[in-house]
Image (tube, rainbow, N blue to C red; front, side, top):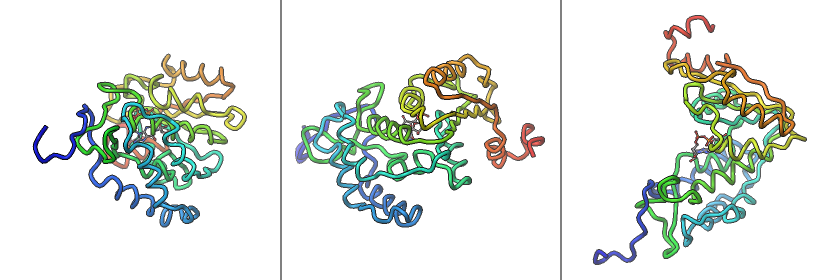
Length: 263
Ligand code: C8R
Protein backbone atom coordinates (compact mmCIF):
# COMPACT_ATOMS: atom_id res chain seq x y z
CA UNK A 1 0.00 0.00 0.00
CA UNK A 2 1.43 3.33 -1.05
CA UNK A 3 1.88 5.85 1.74
CA UNK A 4 -0.59 8.70 1.69
CA UNK A 5 -3.16 6.78 -0.29
CA UNK A 6 -6.32 6.78 1.80
CA UNK A 7 -7.71 3.57 0.33
CA UNK A 8 -6.82 1.53 -2.68
CA UNK A 9 -9.47 0.09 -4.92
CA UNK A 10 -9.50 -3.39 -6.24
CA UNK A 11 -7.82 -3.74 -9.62
CA UNK A 12 -9.88 -4.92 -12.56
CA UNK A 13 -9.23 -5.52 -16.24
CA UNK A 14 -11.78 -3.05 -17.64
CA UNK A 15 -11.76 0.75 -18.09
CA UNK A 16 -12.29 2.69 -14.90
CA UNK A 17 -15.13 5.12 -14.23
CA UNK A 18 -15.21 7.86 -16.89
CA UNK A 19 -13.61 11.04 -15.43
CA UNK A 20 -16.31 13.51 -14.32
CA UNK A 21 -18.94 10.75 -14.56
CA UNK A 22 -21.46 12.46 -12.26
CA UNK A 23 -21.10 15.84 -13.97
CA UNK A 24 -21.52 14.20 -17.38
CA UNK A 25 -24.71 12.33 -16.49
CA UNK A 26 -26.14 15.41 -14.77
CA UNK A 27 -25.40 17.55 -17.83
CA UNK A 28 -26.80 14.96 -20.22
CA UNK A 29 -29.93 14.64 -18.09
CA UNK A 30 -30.54 18.40 -18.31
CA UNK A 31 -29.74 18.50 -22.03
CA UNK A 32 -32.17 15.67 -22.71
CA UNK A 33 -35.04 16.81 -20.50
CA UNK A 34 -34.78 20.55 -21.07
CA UNK A 35 -33.69 20.73 -24.70
CA UNK A 36 -34.08 17.43 -26.61
CA UNK A 37 -37.41 16.25 -25.14
CA UNK A 38 -39.00 19.17 -23.26
CA UNK A 39 -42.08 17.03 -22.50
CA UNK A 40 -39.80 15.46 -19.86
CA UNK A 41 -38.86 18.85 -18.35
CA UNK A 42 -40.50 17.87 -15.04
CA UNK A 43 -37.93 15.12 -14.39
CA UNK A 44 -35.65 15.86 -11.44
CA UNK A 45 -32.10 15.44 -12.74
CA UNK A 46 -30.51 15.84 -9.29
CA UNK A 47 -32.63 12.97 -7.98
CA UNK A 48 -31.93 10.89 -11.08
CA UNK A 49 -28.17 11.28 -10.67
CA UNK A 50 -28.44 10.37 -6.96
CA UNK A 51 -30.39 7.23 -7.83
CA UNK A 52 -27.82 6.34 -10.49
CA UNK A 53 -24.96 6.69 -7.99
CA UNK A 54 -26.82 4.79 -5.27
CA UNK A 55 -27.22 1.87 -7.66
CA UNK A 56 -23.49 1.09 -7.49
CA UNK A 57 -21.60 3.13 -4.87
CA UNK A 58 -20.35 1.18 -1.83
CA UNK A 59 -21.23 -2.08 -3.57
CA UNK A 60 -19.24 -4.97 -4.99
CA UNK A 61 -19.06 -4.14 -8.73
CA UNK A 62 -19.25 -7.86 -9.57
CA UNK A 63 -22.53 -8.47 -7.75
CA UNK A 64 -24.67 -5.88 -9.44
CA UNK A 65 -28.38 -6.73 -9.76
CA UNK A 66 -31.37 -5.53 -11.62
CA UNK A 67 -32.96 -4.33 -8.40
CA UNK A 68 -30.03 -1.96 -7.71
CA UNK A 69 -31.20 0.04 -10.71
CA UNK A 70 -34.93 -0.10 -9.90
CA UNK A 71 -35.12 3.32 -8.15
CA UNK A 72 -33.31 4.84 -11.16
CA UNK A 73 -35.77 3.18 -13.55
CA UNK A 74 -38.70 4.50 -11.53
CA UNK A 75 -37.46 8.08 -11.91
CA UNK A 76 -36.83 7.82 -15.66
CA UNK A 77 -40.05 6.36 -17.06
CA UNK A 78 -40.83 7.51 -20.57
CA UNK A 79 -43.39 6.59 -23.22
CA UNK A 80 -42.15 5.76 -26.71
CA UNK A 81 -44.82 5.94 -29.45
CA UNK A 82 -45.89 2.66 -31.09
CA UNK A 83 -44.00 1.66 -34.22
CA UNK A 84 -40.97 3.86 -33.45
CA UNK A 85 -38.54 1.52 -31.69
CA UNK A 86 -35.23 0.59 -33.33
CA UNK A 87 -33.01 -2.14 -31.86
CA UNK A 88 -29.52 -2.91 -33.12
CA UNK A 89 -26.71 -5.35 -32.62
CA UNK A 90 -23.14 -4.65 -33.73
CA UNK A 91 -24.54 -1.78 -35.78
CA UNK A 92 -25.00 0.94 -33.18
CA UNK A 93 -23.40 3.69 -35.19
CA UNK A 94 -25.63 3.20 -38.24
CA UNK A 95 -28.76 2.79 -36.09
CA UNK A 96 -27.97 6.05 -34.30
CA UNK A 97 -27.35 7.89 -37.56
CA UNK A 98 -30.73 6.61 -38.73
CA UNK A 99 -32.67 7.87 -35.69
CA UNK A 100 -30.76 11.15 -35.82
CA UNK A 101 -32.21 11.75 -39.28
CA UNK A 102 -35.58 10.06 -38.59
CA UNK A 103 -36.23 12.22 -35.56
CA UNK A 104 -39.39 10.41 -34.47
CA UNK A 105 -37.63 7.01 -34.21
CA UNK A 106 -35.96 5.85 -30.99
CA UNK A 107 -33.03 3.61 -30.20
CA UNK A 108 -32.37 3.08 -26.49
CA UNK A 109 -29.80 5.92 -26.62
CA UNK A 110 -32.60 8.23 -27.79
CA UNK A 111 -34.37 7.63 -24.45
CA UNK A 112 -33.34 9.50 -21.31
CA UNK A 113 -31.48 6.70 -19.56
CA UNK A 114 -29.70 5.42 -22.68
CA UNK A 115 -28.75 8.97 -23.60
CA UNK A 116 -27.26 9.60 -20.16
CA UNK A 117 -25.17 6.42 -20.02
CA UNK A 118 -24.07 5.93 -23.63
CA UNK A 119 -20.32 5.44 -23.97
CA UNK A 120 -19.58 5.76 -20.25
CA UNK A 121 -18.03 3.40 -17.74
CA UNK A 122 -18.72 3.35 -14.01
CA UNK A 123 -18.19 1.26 -10.90
CA UNK A 124 -17.74 1.53 -7.17
CA UNK A 125 -16.23 -0.66 -4.52
CA UNK A 126 -17.68 -2.52 -1.54
CA UNK A 127 -15.08 -1.00 0.74
CA UNK A 128 -15.47 2.67 -0.16
CA UNK A 129 -18.10 5.24 -1.01
CA UNK A 130 -16.06 6.58 -3.97
CA UNK A 131 -16.15 5.67 -7.61
CA UNK A 132 -13.27 3.60 -8.93
CA UNK A 133 -11.62 5.74 -11.61
CA UNK A 134 -8.71 3.32 -11.97
CA UNK A 135 -10.44 0.20 -13.26
CA UNK A 136 -13.82 -1.54 -13.46
CA UNK A 137 -14.66 -5.22 -13.97
CA UNK A 138 -14.31 -6.47 -17.53
CA UNK A 139 -17.37 -8.50 -18.58
CA UNK A 140 -15.37 -11.49 -19.85
CA UNK A 141 -12.11 -11.26 -17.89
CA UNK A 142 -13.66 -10.40 -14.52
CA UNK A 143 -17.38 -10.93 -14.12
CA UNK A 144 -20.59 -10.97 -16.10
CA UNK A 145 -22.69 -9.27 -13.38
CA UNK A 146 -20.72 -6.04 -13.39
CA UNK A 147 -22.35 -2.62 -12.84
CA UNK A 148 -22.28 -1.60 -16.52
CA UNK A 149 -23.47 -4.89 -18.08
CA UNK A 150 -26.28 -5.26 -15.56
CA UNK A 151 -27.33 -1.68 -16.29
CA UNK A 152 -27.59 -2.31 -20.06
CA UNK A 153 -29.38 -5.61 -19.55
CA UNK A 154 -31.85 -3.93 -17.18
CA UNK A 155 -32.62 -0.91 -19.33
CA UNK A 156 -32.69 -2.98 -22.54
CA UNK A 157 -35.23 -5.29 -20.91
CA UNK A 158 -37.45 -2.36 -19.95
CA UNK A 159 -37.08 -0.84 -23.43
CA UNK A 160 -38.14 -4.10 -25.14
CA UNK A 161 -40.99 -4.76 -22.69
CA UNK A 162 -42.46 -1.33 -23.30
CA UNK A 163 -42.20 -1.47 -27.11
CA UNK A 164 -45.44 -1.50 -29.12
CA UNK A 165 -46.27 -1.71 -32.83
CA UNK A 166 -43.86 -2.94 -35.47
CA UNK A 167 -40.27 -2.83 -34.24
CA UNK A 168 -37.09 -2.71 -36.30
CA UNK A 169 -33.60 -4.09 -35.77
CA UNK A 170 -30.43 -3.09 -37.58
CA UNK A 171 -28.02 -6.01 -37.89
CA UNK A 172 -24.47 -6.05 -39.21
CA UNK A 173 -24.18 -8.38 -42.19
CA UNK A 174 -20.40 -7.92 -42.33
CA UNK A 175 -19.96 -9.35 -38.88
CA UNK A 176 -19.51 -13.10 -38.38
CA UNK A 177 -22.18 -13.16 -35.66
CA UNK A 178 -24.83 -11.11 -37.52
CA UNK A 179 -27.37 -12.53 -35.08
CA UNK A 180 -25.69 -13.35 -31.77
CA UNK A 181 -27.68 -15.28 -29.16
CA UNK A 182 -25.38 -13.91 -26.45
CA UNK A 183 -25.76 -10.24 -27.35
CA UNK A 184 -28.17 -7.97 -25.50
CA UNK A 185 -30.45 -8.06 -28.51
CA UNK A 186 -30.33 -11.87 -28.83
CA UNK A 187 -30.37 -12.67 -25.12
CA UNK A 188 -32.56 -9.96 -23.57
CA UNK A 189 -34.55 -7.87 -26.03
CA UNK A 190 -36.19 -10.48 -28.27
CA UNK A 191 -37.41 -12.43 -25.23
CA UNK A 192 -38.91 -9.35 -23.63
CA UNK A 193 -40.96 -8.14 -26.57
CA UNK A 194 -44.67 -8.52 -25.79
CA UNK A 195 -46.42 -10.42 -28.60
CA UNK A 196 -49.78 -8.80 -27.64
CA UNK A 197 -48.24 -5.40 -28.41
CA UNK A 198 -45.62 -6.19 -31.04
CA UNK A 199 -47.06 -7.96 -34.11
CA UNK A 200 -43.92 -7.84 -36.25
CA UNK A 201 -40.17 -7.42 -36.08
CA UNK A 202 -38.48 -6.08 -39.22
CA UNK A 203 -34.80 -6.87 -39.56
CA UNK A 204 -32.46 -4.88 -41.78
CA UNK A 205 -29.26 -6.79 -42.51
CA UNK A 206 -26.72 -4.17 -43.51
CA UNK A 207 -23.38 -4.95 -45.08
CA UNK A 208 -20.60 -2.38 -44.72
CA UNK A 209 -19.71 -0.83 -48.06
CA UNK A 210 -16.17 -2.09 -47.63
CA UNK A 211 -17.07 -5.21 -45.68
CA UNK A 212 -16.76 -8.73 -46.94
CA UNK A 213 -20.07 -10.28 -47.87
CA UNK A 214 -20.77 -12.34 -44.77
CA UNK A 215 -24.43 -12.82 -43.87
CA UNK A 216 -27.71 -11.99 -45.56
CA UNK A 217 -31.37 -12.59 -44.77
CA UNK A 218 -31.00 -16.10 -46.16
CA UNK A 219 -28.24 -17.07 -43.69
CA UNK A 220 -29.04 -19.73 -41.14
CA UNK A 221 -28.24 -17.31 -38.28
CA UNK A 222 -31.08 -15.08 -39.44
CA UNK A 223 -33.30 -18.12 -39.68
CA UNK A 224 -32.51 -18.82 -36.00
CA UNK A 225 -33.83 -15.36 -35.17
CA UNK A 226 -36.92 -15.95 -37.29
CA UNK A 227 -37.64 -19.25 -35.49
CA UNK A 228 -37.30 -17.68 -32.03
CA UNK A 229 -39.74 -14.91 -32.95
CA UNK A 230 -42.25 -17.17 -34.64
CA UNK A 231 -42.18 -19.41 -31.58
CA UNK A 232 -43.08 -16.30 -29.60
CA UNK A 233 -45.88 -15.46 -32.06
CA UNK A 234 -44.15 -12.41 -33.48
CA UNK A 235 -44.00 -12.19 -37.27
CA UNK A 236 -40.59 -11.70 -38.83
CA UNK A 237 -39.53 -9.90 -41.99
CA UNK A 238 -36.01 -9.35 -43.24
CA UNK A 239 -34.46 -7.13 -45.87
CA UNK A 240 -30.84 -6.91 -46.99
CA UNK A 241 -29.22 -3.51 -47.38
CA UNK A 242 -32.41 -1.54 -46.58
CA UNK A 243 -32.33 1.49 -48.83
CA UNK A 244 -32.75 4.30 -46.23
CA UNK A 245 -29.81 2.86 -44.28
CA UNK A 246 -27.74 2.22 -47.41
CA UNK A 247 -28.26 5.87 -48.38
CA UNK A 248 -26.81 6.88 -44.99
CA UNK A 249 -23.77 4.67 -45.60
CA UNK A 250 -23.41 6.31 -49.01
CA UNK A 251 -23.41 9.85 -47.58
CA UNK A 252 -20.01 8.95 -46.14
CA UNK A 253 -18.75 7.25 -49.26
CA UNK A 254 -20.65 8.65 -52.26
CA UNK A 255 -18.17 7.43 -54.87
CA UNK A 256 -18.30 3.81 -53.79
CA UNK A 257 -19.36 1.36 -56.51
CA UNK A 258 -22.42 0.23 -54.49
CA UNK A 259 -23.52 3.85 -54.11
CA UNK A 260 -23.65 4.71 -57.80
CA UNK A 261 -26.92 2.90 -58.37
CA UNK A 262 -28.84 3.38 -55.11
CA UNK A 263 -30.13 6.86 -55.89
N1 C8R B 1 -28.10 -1.70 -25.79
C1 C8R B 1 -27.17 -2.60 -25.29
N2 C8R B 1 -25.91 -2.26 -24.99
C2 C8R B 1 -25.52 -0.98 -25.14
C3 C8R B 1 -26.42 -0.01 -25.55
C4 C8R B 1 -27.76 -0.37 -25.87
O1 C8R B 1 -28.57 0.48 -26.25
N3 C8R B 1 -25.78 1.18 -25.63
C5 C8R B 1 -24.50 0.96 -25.30
N4 C8R B 1 -23.53 1.90 -25.29
N5 C8R B 1 -24.33 -0.35 -24.99
P1 C8R B 1 -23.42 -4.97 -29.19
P2 C8R B 1 -25.95 -5.79 -28.27
C6 C8R B 1 -23.03 -0.97 -24.69
O2 C8R B 1 -22.91 -6.36 -29.07
O3 C8R B 1 -25.26 -6.50 -27.17
C7 C8R B 1 -29.39 -2.26 -26.27
C8 C8R B 1 -23.03 -2.18 -23.78
O4 C8R B 1 -21.82 -2.17 -23.06
O5 C8R B 1 -23.06 -4.21 -30.43
O6 C8R B 1 -26.85 -6.65 -29.13
C9 C8R B 1 -29.98 -1.59 -27.53
O7 C8R B 1 -31.38 -1.40 -27.32
C10 C8R B 1 -23.09 -3.39 -24.72
O8 C8R B 1 -22.35 -4.50 -24.25
O9 C8R B 1 -24.98 -5.03 -29.19
C11 C8R B 1 -29.71 -2.54 -28.68
O10 C8R B 1 -30.88 -2.95 -29.36
C12 C8R B 1 -22.52 -2.88 -26.04
O11 C8R B 1 -22.52 -1.44 -25.94
C13 C8R B 1 -29.03 -3.73 -28.05
O12 C8R B 1 -29.20 -3.61 -26.65
C14 C8R B 1 -23.44 -3.27 -27.16
O13 C8R B 1 -22.88 -4.25 -27.90
C15 C8R B 1 -27.56 -3.74 -28.43
O14 C8R B 1 -26.81 -4.62 -27.65
